[in-house]
Image 1 (cartoon, rainbow, N blue to C red):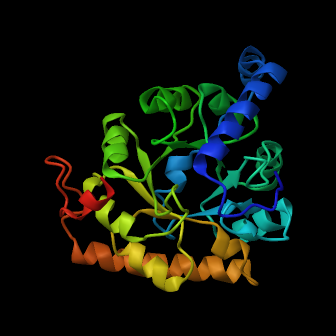
Image 2: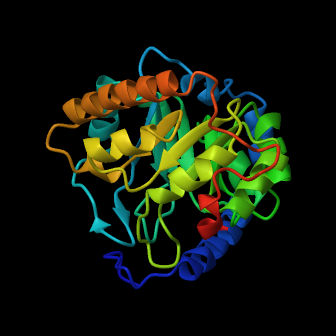
Amino acid sequence: MSPEITKKITIDQILEQRLIDLKKSMIKSPIEEIKKDLKDADDPKNFKKALKIRENFPLICEYKPASPSLGNISSRGLEETLMLYQEGGASAVSILTEEKFFKGNIEFLDQASKLIDVPIMRKDFLLDEYQIFEARAHGASSVLLMSEIYPDISAGIETCRSLGMEPLVECKNSIDLFKAIDADAEIIGINNRSFKDFSIDLKRTKALAPLIPEDIVLVSESGITNLEDVKTVCGYGVDALLIGTSVMQSDNVVETIQRFIQMSKNSSELYHKSNPKKSRAHTKNRTGDGSFEQFA
């Protein structure tokens, strides 16, 4: 299939390809060898701590060369992009490692860990603990675990923590969200993009945010393209944003990041002033305001 990807690509095709890739990787680099190499590895950077520093609103900037919905996204290379992210003030960096549809590479993690000082998260369609060990061995400080896809979220979180990493557990609906909370996830991401047709709906963050306890770091992901979007999602009580396409395609990456951070900070401060009792969550009865039912 051509790497010039289109909306015709489905999540099932991506997962099928990742399973093929996983089996090849497990043969090429057995997990026993990876675990052996990790014994001499440096400790990972603290991903969760990076998302809780309040001087500037935490922004996770993503390096994503391509996507099924957009095709090629930017002509900037990894090094140039990451240096601009760090200069702009990104708190952490997310790096796509899926090769066929997103033009990522596991080696990007190695390169990134030598280029920047902020924590690096592996973003991919992880299906097995092997990929968590693999991420740590290549320099990642965190991984994205999709609650809808990863077979055992509790086990995945436990594996991450055994390696000194705190994962970002991604949810798209209330069922996945409660599964993540019950698994003791400490960082939860709400993905505003649908796997069915890759459409965006920021109301997903609005609907699900009230279900998440205040002691969990809440990240809104996908579809945040401008300052108005930033203002909107930060008004829902999120703690951090994951932004990719809008910064990658910007003519002035540093300025765009800084403007996003400032708007996020202002909107977040306004939210907390309006909610002095930190009333985002209603998880004891798991009701929220009822609007989450459309994403059940």
